Amino acid sequence: MPELPEVEALKDFLTEHLTGHEIVRVLPVAVSVLKTYDPPLSALEGHEVTAVRRYGKFLDVGTDGGPHLVTHLARAGWLQWRDRLPDGPPKPGKGPLALRVALETGAGFDLTEAGTQKRLAVYVVADPRQVPGVARLGPDPLAADFDEARLAALLAGERRRIKGALRDQALIAGVGNAYSDEILHAARMSPYKIAASLTPEETATLYEALRSTLTAAVERSRGLAAGRLKAEKKSGLRVHGRTGEPCPVCGDTIREVSFSDSSFQYCPTCQTGGRPLADRRLSRLLK
Image (cartoon, rainbow, N blue to C red):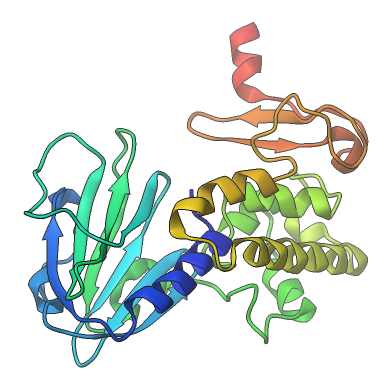
């Protein structure tokens, strides 16, 4: 799933390639991705792109005097830039193509989604805050005013495990499964630690890990073409998706906890005092 660093990089890429250009066609292929109907997709046509912004994991393409095209790529969605779009309209089918946006130059981009769980979402709105997911977002962790005191206030009274709290978009915008693993590894903190139980020293450590991990990921992605961002994300991850590999810090074996539709990874030595966390799915299989 694209998270804050990748969406930030896509925002920068689209700012360079879209701003000042006119949208001439918006072609829906998978109608299920469109979550709004008024204004219609065609309302974007004939308008010049004036700005591209990021709200958490949402991308917002704003136009001059016209609506905004807001996109959430969900788990398996992606944006593919084309310097020259194919001639003729795309054919509906079982492929990954969901939406195509064409510019007056002949260039444009495709929104695609792999797999069978179709969660990619597209909204056409007068104001991005009309999108429910945008309206409920918590503060951006890379914002200038997001300081250690802000994080401490957000976590106070949170009886959830810190892993879940970090992923809650209404609490902190933009962090998902992968980067929450990376942040907690950098902070040497158990994913199961209760958020409200953090000491001031632990909160300071978590804050530093949060900011440094996301900032480093953004810097690695900056300037890359859209098609290279997935590979860059994977190469920069130290524990997420690396079950069975040695921890780059201590050499212990990276472990995994699995759920029905997701999993997370951690290092026992670095994060849990050497104790493996119970994998509930595996435990059920052994019964």
